[in-house]
Each structure stands twice: as structure tokens, then as C-alpha cells.
Image (cartoon, rainbow, N blue to C red; front, side, top):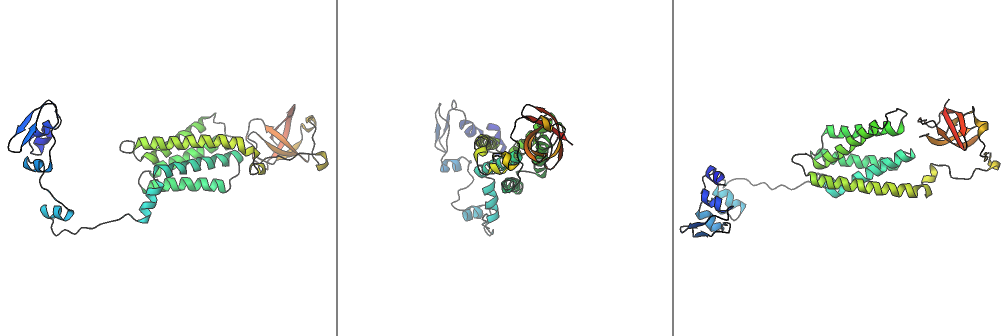
Length: 302
């Protein structure tokens, strides 16, 4: 404090008295009296007397006048609607909700294989989140590309037959979460990492809760029933209900749904629950029954 005061040509003893309780200071000219055990504080008049305040101004115009800018033109600006909109989307609460909606929508799309309006809402949520962060200079193009790369790695891990042994999934999660955190914080050195951590943690926690809720409730919902076989298969409808599936060994058919590895296929005119040998088989793909293990029909690409 003494060095700083000397740099700006102020009295160093006064600066020291502001931070050192053990120091005593008496100045009759400025009526200063700092006893030991207290820190020095100055009123506005005292600060002027000892040179710690250059002048007193009661308004912006008065301050400009005293510093030689009497004829300066003062321009008052207000935030535009677009700036307010960006500020709204980059606020912690809204950003967290956008992340939550985006993650939940993508999970639903991957889980059901049905890319409908829910997936579109998820994509829109992430577009608003990263778009606002980019305009506010919180996220760069590299951050956005990192997030997209993370999603691609997750798709490779979940929806393709490429054997990655979990590596692609780990890379995808790291890239996606890292990009979201950077877009929230803006800068690891000067950004608000605490708020970013809390916002992202809350979003992920909410996502986990919604995933558990979806897993428990979706199988019972009418929406979920559109993507799975729920009706009873009766012989009168042309379905085979016997549990002896050995007669299907060697027969060919077509997958009705994606096999990841389980799904539904039509074999010899019957809709059956089948399981691939661990490989991913897209819908509408020719398959062949390899073997039967009890009630499990094991198939592979024909």
C-alpha cells in the first residue's frame, strides 16, 4: 500500500494506516486521528484535504466540466431487444433448462430410434444454447464443433456396429460435457466457473432423474407402445405362440426394427422377438436364424 501510494504521489502513511491496525496516525492539519487497534477511514472532505480525492462532482456534467470536458457530447445507450434476448438465453436458469431439454430429447431419440418432434426440440434447444453463447462470445466455433464431435462419437458407440469397446462413448461424453461447460463459463481463467459448474451439474442431475422416470413410465405409456410390440399374438391372426422355435433354425426373414441387439423380425410370416449375436442390424435388413436357445432366437445378417 505504501508503494502504491508513492506511485500515485499520495501520502504513504495514510495508505498504510488504512490496512495496519497497529499503526497510529495523527494529523492536525486534516484533523485525522487514528488510534492503535483501528483502521483509518476517510470522509469525503478528509480525502480532499489529504490529497486522496482530486475533486467532488455531483453529476456527470459536473464531473466532465471539472476535468475539462465541458462541451463533451454525452450519448446514452440502451440494450436492444436482441441483446436482451441473448442475455436471456445465456442466463444460468435458461441455459440449464436448454441443456436439460436437449439431453433428454437426444436420449429419447436414441432409446426409441424414433427421430420425431422430440428430437427436433432437442436440436433446437442446443442450437439456442450454443447460438446465444457464440453471440455473447462465451463459445467459439471450436467449442461448438467439439460438442458435435462428441455427439458423433456417441452415435458411433450406440447406433453403429463399429466395435469401439466403449472408447468412442467415453470420448463423446468428455467432448460433449467439456463443450457445454466451456460455453457456460466462457473462459476458464476469467469466466464464472462456479456458476457454470452449478448450472451444468443441476442440468445433468435433472437429466438423470428424467431418464429414470422415462425408463419406469414409458413402457406403460401409449406413446411408447407405438415403437414396441404390445398386442397379444394369437394363432387365429397368423402368429405362432409356441415356445418351441427350433423349426426356425436356418430360415431367413427381415428385421422390422433395429436390432440393438434385440428387436422384432418377420420370419416365415410370423412376427418374432429376436436377438442378434451382439451386432447392430438396421431395420428392413435380411436376416437368418443361426440357432435357438430356449425362447431366444439368435439371428445374423443374411
